[in-house]
Picture 1: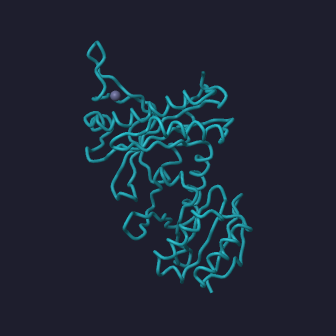
Picture 2: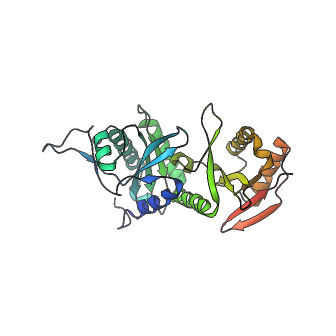
Picture 3: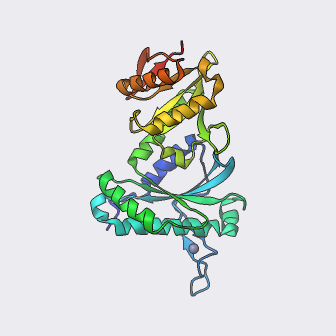
Length: 297
Ligand SMILES: [Zn+2]
């Protein structure tokens, strides 16, 4: 099995350059080892190390604290890895690296200037896969999730494909294009929180609530959709929650990146639920993403 590209870190570099816009701060250089305090030292007394393709710190809108995410870049074709055993190994290795480096506070402090209170509990496999096959991968992931990932404290592992990289690009372009962009996050037992940081979990969500300021100073609220399926219960549930959590929302405009047909369905749904919104009245195209504007009555 060989990585298909000679420049195996191009994908991680692309990933790192996009994450800046999402509020992630790169900690230290790309592709550099960090010494591990948890692993047994080598026979010559040198500490064991874990390879770190990229390490980022971000202000987590869920916990309202800084957190770390470890990114492991892979450039393999689906066919070259063949089956779930390799995939399982990737996940096990990454979970172990996350756990061990979180326990290596001295190295994190001296190598990357990361204070002790900042936890590392997320690992991302940034997999650049030119022949990506969702069906096969889902089968592998299901087994991986069931067999390897019961850890205490919990480690969150995310598999990031080209799809996710393109989502991140879409989000970062949206941030560039608009003023004061913030995203909505729901913390258990709390009202909606707005944050300019997009945490790793949110990149793996099909639905991202956002707001931005217009030229006239008004806030516009809406949603970025990925996968374009407005008929899912998830999208409806989130919108419902969003509407009920934002009492001053009535006076604002709602926008959406759904294609026209689905946006209309969603508009009708919102109109029925809230009785405050008309069906879409304006549709504009921004690059390849159709944006539908809903106007409040
Ligand atoms: Zn270790």
